[in-house]
Length: 150
Ligand code: HEC
Image 1 (tube, protein in one colour):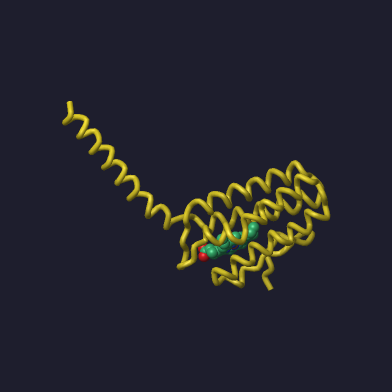
Image 2 (cartoon, helix red, strand yellow):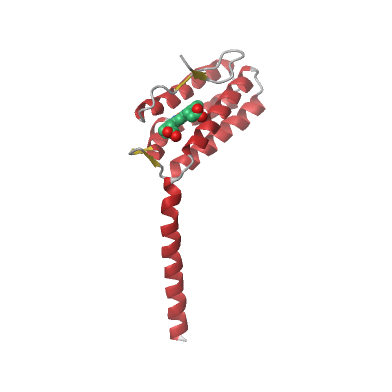
């Protein structure tokens, strides 16, 4: 009996080791470019929803931004020697939370103010990670992207 229990425990330990080993390469392959695609799309749509005072839709997109950010923060993502998870937590997560408040208040003026702040958060991180040429902006009417290409 003791032996069986012993083997069982050993099996569990081995399983644990193999799963922790497996996680490491996964972490390196975190799809940061997809995360950024989500960020761009959701932040642009959030702007359009807020501008039209469609607060229900704005709430949906701010929630998506929040989820993408939480996932990034908890995944310990290192890219070109920069800890993107720490940066997202330090310079971006609070701005998403503020945005959530603005949407809850259904206030156009606060929404615009916090949207500026949100976009500055995107750009701060692009600068901090040596991508200063990735300049996000508040979209103008008919802009296809909320990005400055000049
Ligand atoms: C934690 C830091 C960080 C934050 C916050 C961040 N970015 Fe990025 N972003 C990056 C990095 C790093 C890259 C380059 C990724 C690569 O090299 O593959 C990038 C790349 C991009 C790109 C280029 C890829 C493409 O699809 O054109 C866009 C656009 C972009 N980010 C948009 C945003 C937007 C919009 C926000 C805010 C809502 C944002 N990012 C917030 C770090 C960040």
